[in-house]
Image (cartoon, rainbow, N blue to C red; front, top):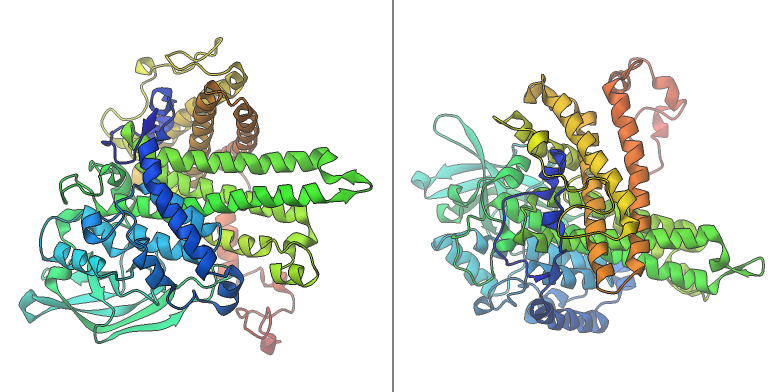
Length: 620
């Protein structure tokens, strides 16, 4: 089946069905494939970017200099690559989300900072809001600036932490409400040091004293707007992440995002339980404000663009580097590839690529049949961790050559594979868009809400049985015999998840349940692994039917690895449910209060690390 991510949205979520103990193969199969015409539309953009990267970007120089080449952003804009999904009438390419992902993956395969510049602007930049805005002054302003070729970004995170629901940045109404004065500081802002237009989250205090976080579109040339610094990270060197300061920056009231556009997008519940249609279900040229797109769902698709394509690029590169290394290395007069453990490690890398690719496609093209917004939240951790396992395993396989920088390898005549740089970049994918345990918590919180609704929770007697444990699954989409054991275990695990969710929610109010963060996070991670298992099985079954039997081996390896992870997660969850002995949270509190564990640091001192060394030796 071929489809486009501009297909009409559906309302049932595959992930939410898993929480209810149901494995809905009718949603996953036949597994969606990109429409050939849509893929052709993206091919030219991918080729165009490839030529620019070869001509203009030296990845090693970007790493060393900490910045993209002079004029490169202008070149991207001239090529239309900063307006991937913008309507052609505004100078954009009008591409689908999936084609945008292909472009970002191409960038990440060459230079991760380029990928982030593209993904942040196209996924979170001002042009994205055209999908959510009705005709009016704000939409006209954004359309005009996009047509003029501005670089944009979103300024939300603050020093206090992005996980806070409130914001310390304040917008004060002036001039009888015709304008606002915004003051505050923002950190870790993608494209922050190069953006010309940013949307800024700020707290607005009402006449009755109530506080609400709203979004304002701010011209970075405005008086009082300052780029304080460009952040330097462990990886992603050259990406334009900046610290911003706003000191009474005047913003006209018409540059305030309307309330009816969906509210503040950072609320996890708004982005997963909204009744609005999905952003992926809106065609680039469709009339604005008619599909019910809200800011929460735009953020989900934006985050997918920032994380999933680079994760796929990392995993693919790791797979290629593994083959290069293994095929040129001999150990004790034997080709390295003759050793069983080596072949297994390479196979595991291949399975990670298949998992990431399958999730990336499902979350976008699956919107024709399912509400994939909950799946997008779970997929963020799945793809980021899979890419990390791939590059970490590759570094282990290459040993010292993996840990060595590309520059050092080149100096001694070895193939200058940038494994070390990729390793550092990949770690950033686990941080960007929300740290892992918080996303697991948010996912579980959103998907457990149905249990608290009237008539919520699973109804076993009414459930369709997607797999009865017989010769093959029931329904019109049979699976290869090699999948049957995986299918039985998957069905059993989904039912066990629903049982556990029912037990968690039966007599515990939602507010109290949310305090049990470790249990919730484990539930979220278990459900995510089941999602990954399901997607891999569905896609591999269809590809095998199309004449590619090797995918069944990929599925076996991917499912076995996921099942091992699930065994560990279920063991942890069982321990949390029946825990006895010391409470780890209490032990953590003991350390934080400095009341009994200081002996653990010996003579290292008690201050935070300084630039002169790991510890502040001045305290000794």
